[in-house]
Image 1 (tube, rainbow, N blue to C red):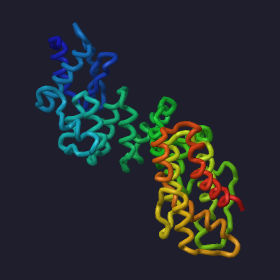
Image 2 (image 1 turned 45 degrees about the horizontal axis):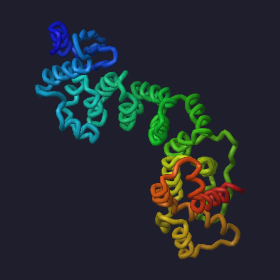
Image 3 (image 1 turned 30 degrees about the vertical axis):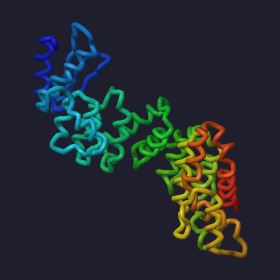
Image 4 (image 1 turned 180 degrees about the vertical axis):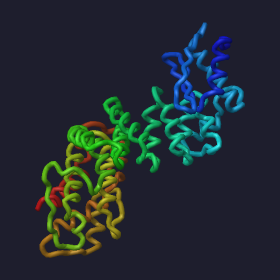
Length: 346
């Protein structure tokens, strides 16, 4: 049971707020009014604090949605699928329930005002980074001040992220538009020379505008099939992938690196395969020849067939991690690395 004084204060907060969040650690409920001013209630439970927080959430959902018994189960199922109706979005941000905020963040009906409220509701919750990533997948968010605030938070949160896919995704998301300044981009790129998950984010997001800190020059291959790798940016891309693959010790870095490499050099007569030998067989069937650039042409076509299927079954079957990935997959990685070396050597 809630204390009578807390019940009264919560009802007033519900009536005067456009968004509500709960800090379960500090035992406070914070409301945000239409003027974007915060109102705080310090909870005073007489017993178990966890049970008290549940009672607070039950009161909120009952008053806001008229639903007895807590957060509606159907919203839990739909919250990460973007299937919550737009008419519910404002109400969901008054529940003090993180899963409801996730539902709004995933909605296809966000506008600038809802964006601000959603990010405010996410603040100081355990899901703040996750919600921030969801929000940065919305195209309109990239050009907003709130989008810049989210990107800055995610950038500062990166050192605490251990999940490799989240590192890649976060890097890719914050590199959009002008979300972060050039100084932060340069710092991320520099960190990526050691932590290659960052570099995967760069090659996925910034093809055509990668940093050229090594003064890499454009090349002048003549064969039509080699024009795609002649530019300065293409050479930076390929050398960056070579650096990533040389230091591979994490499966998701490898998967994403191979996928972006194969997509970049895709060829309409080369189909992605699950072995290097099958890619080479396709190249042989094409019977494309050139007098002076045959090794480079073959390298370009081999990389066109690269994808994660080349390695995923072996990694899964042997539960490979760390340097064991490079050793067990040498027969796959060495031809790819050799091809990259051929294409980046004048």
